[in-house]
Image (tube, rainbow, N blue to C red):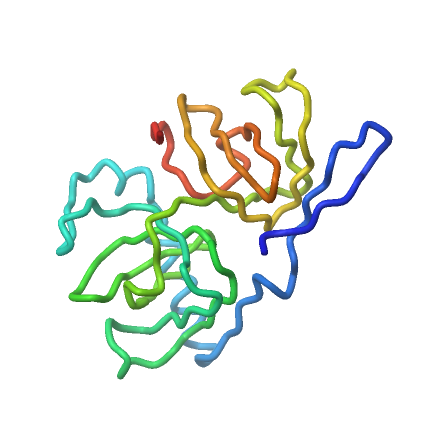
Length: 197
């Protein structure tokens, strides 16, 4: 479950909170390797450039592209196969990640923090989602625009289903029984200027 809803003020704007245990990530590899992985992710974190590369993977689908986790628990491995060690275990169904490379039935992914590794394709789904980010709550609005009426307050870490993006600034998302518009710069899960319908 992506979060919980509760009334947060007299106007009954609902607040959606992320479950901290539901999206925990455990480090399994060594600290040295984790540091290498983090620095590698920082150096390779150029999604908007990659998105316009025109590269196609072995599956025939474009690279990079966003997908989400199908399973509740997903092992991130150092290479494309079960013989490679598990580096991290993600525990969050629906979490958006970016496929940056493909090998046979394995997909190299990158998460919102820039961490990369390999997962089996069966752990992924084409359904798009977004991860709310920022220092504070983000306002889900009825219409695209800062003056539009609020629908809910979303805390960082909430995962919402991506419905569509019609321009470079706003996307419509759904979380629990709420739907509305978020500014594109408040979440991870789309490319800059991407039109998604």
